[in-house]
Image (cartoon, rainbow, N blue to C red; front, side):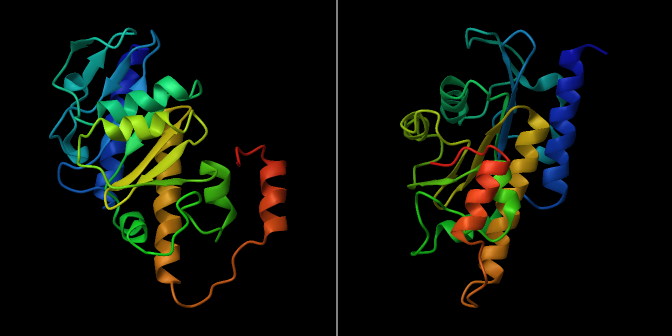
Length: 215
């Protein structure tokens, strides 16, 4: 099996796992990954993560031209913004995950550091998550908002919409977006109970020990 064929299978397998565990439902969410030749494989528009067909993934060449597969997700500007501003981005995943969306609706969240420091793992996998305002689905302004971050964040939360994460490869991106949703779930479960959060010194130690982007 060629490397691209393996990547196609991996994208569909990981997407189905996210769908099967209720992390994005119906035909929501989209996923993309870099190919060996610098192109992209992207989930088609209107498709379910639970039923992606490896042979029908949208295929772009290294100049951004669609050369095969079905019509891509309408959120391509969002994916392109991460690839264009983060040289380390090898995959992007966007979900409509319930707990992170719920947390984005809360009036007191920090837009520059969306997730509270409840465990070390979201810090290690995501760094600071930027909360972006609400945009209409498919609005190219979402991509412009990501470009405005100048590559400084690997993850953003679209208010009232869902999380978007870029990582070195598709497995890492899926792991990171799951950590984002898990942390949001913890935040909602402990909301109003004054949970003990990680201290500033503990966060600083994590950032130093694991060389985390943190600005």
